Image (tube, rainbow, N blue to C red):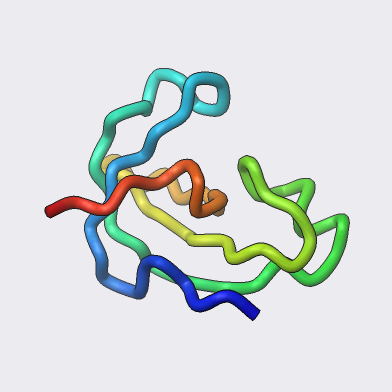
Length: 76
């Protein structure tokens, strides 16, 4: 199992050219970290697959989404 790159409370920048394009570049805190355990769950996570780590992030307007690590950039 891979160690998560981010943890609860980290500030990240959402990066996506396709999913939620209008939010690309937006800052959001990590509100949860979990491992994708089923194909059904993977289908509900942006850019993810079974066995990967997913992150729940919440935008400033309250929208929460689960996304794959590759869609997030750590802030300095």
